[in-house]
Image (tube, rainbow, N blue to C red):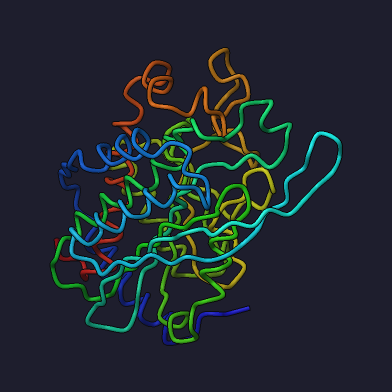
Length: 341
């Protein structure tokens, strides 16, 4: 397991000093509509972007093009993996796929780097039962899970622009994140020792729309001054901006809702896992209701789509794109640009 060293702690501590000073005054923040536009575009034009599918590859090409336009060096990274499919007769067989992640980066004046992660794929049915229940598949737009994370990721990249960075930033749109974390595992395996030393913080963006409130899980959950300072800053930023926010120690480990943040936390990185949900450690995003009988939209093509969410959570996509940017952007700006707008 990789454990951050003293030099990394020192660099992030210096960054946090600028972060706390930057976030102290209450300032008006007017985010662009770019993040929401990207959420809607990705959901509309790349439904069924399951790992290894043509739709996933087209989405990866689109993301690479967008990052290049925004001034980042961007590459596609293909990797071979497999998943277990369970048939109705009880037979299980391994199915091989070639998945594609997108990596976009810009170096800073110092060796440190902030890593921002969001899985780009939608749920791939793992059994005949999944197929019969209309979970995943070719028609799943995946607005909440996870066009929302990709849209905010692109919004952050746009805000960074082409200005000078004190600390570098790396955006990673991971494949094969549903439901396992195969893409995150592959990325970690390929990280060099130098890249691990230079990674000051990992921010995971996942399912920002459908939950009752924005939610931040964090790790390490105790005894780490760096993470405590970040969490304190996020809480203060949320209060100033009027954003309902849940702060929860620890990264969720349940197989039903564990995401790409978990492998990075297990590897010893400081992690902020930003999504949406309700209180408690369960996987529910909101109180069960007639429109959301399971308390979530995860994997459900009939609910995790633009028409349904616009109808039953009117204005939520726009609100979460705006609130996500308002919450995360000041933190990222301070860490990467030394508190200078």
